[in-house]
Length: 486
Ligand code: ATP
Image 1 (cartoon, protein in one colour):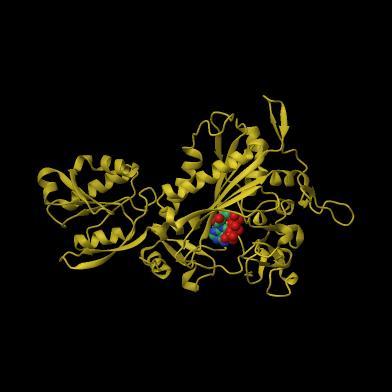
Image 2 (spheres, rainbow, N blue to C red):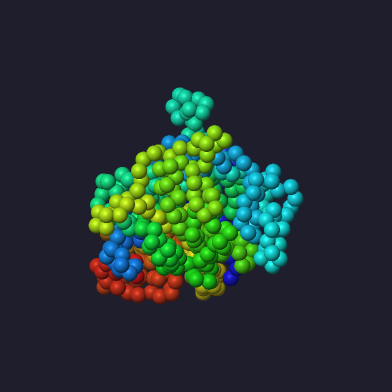
């Protein structure tokens, strides 16, 4: 089945997953609102990530010679940070330029440095190494949203909405080390909003101007950083598969050396075959980057630039640093080996909105099922992983009398008390009620019927297999909880 993005977008609107922001005023390009179902789905995506990275993360002996277990802790930092943060890591300087990207070699050029439609790198490459170039339209880079703090106007009051959550972890590295008992290697994770003034927001929520990131900085000894990079690269890829993305639609793409940032020894992207892309093309869900000591060193020393194989503090024509760091010592001291070093960092940076969109696209499917009168009908269903489904169970009284609504309402109350997000629906023919739930991905529907009142059993219907099992009403909540655990 070929999935159409238009169909998915209209389902999202119709059933309350995602709406255009400020729609009654005509919407605002690049901004989106999550409706009653969307907010539950996205919460589940975030929760699945947080559980995997922090709450349930308990792995031992990952690397030869590494500590038995390693700590993973969370953080929530402010959206507006000291402007110097962005200057030290180089985001600020790139703010005003219009840039053109070469889609082939991923090099980025100032628009005014590209006089023709050909990638400036092309002539310097031996034939065969550089395929035909494809240049993007000029885009403003870096896209940080400006704001004014307090009553100050002009430069002094200017601050920025963060374009990534990562810097919150770097600037708090010392605070976390000093206030908790973490020892290297360890990770600090955060989920939060980021803002980029994208020139061409497009493809539904894929490229928005306000979006949410799920990022983790893993601090380790430089000698072990390559191994940790491999570990996180593979683990993060698997996370999407475990939550129901089929491996045919997901790739883990290692960047070519010429695509790597100047500080990185390796970067891989998890990419998904979104329906809005041409066949064979994939869109980024997450980047897993080896960032070396670039960020911590920048916050210590100032803006770093490449000089041959080294990173050095950028200087102006008077030999002064163009942008100073904090001047604080952000190195780490290992009290067992008595070694002091600046940790290397592995960063898996995922987008909560892109992941949510990928799960929605992956889940969408249609099949043929007989309706109440036995006539074949197209059934739209969302095969969302039960952990992600916004509603876990729906309770239906078969008819609105003979004590069925009361029993159904009691069961609905028990499911909610057990923390299982559920709905109660007594409107319309039972087949139509099933369809309504299939379309939003509810994995289980429970029907209270004549037999319930006589022998105390209910039916549980499975969304995907359509199998219906009769089980005692008194065991329903436990059974649903068991099925949700998988
Ligand atoms: P792209 O190349 O698509 O612009 P990026 O490489 O700039 O993405 P990162 O800076 O690595 O993205 O950000 C990490 C993650 O944040 C991305 O993989 C993506 O999931 C999410 N993300 C980044 N920009 C946006 C955006 N404009 N809208 C929605 N999600 C985004």
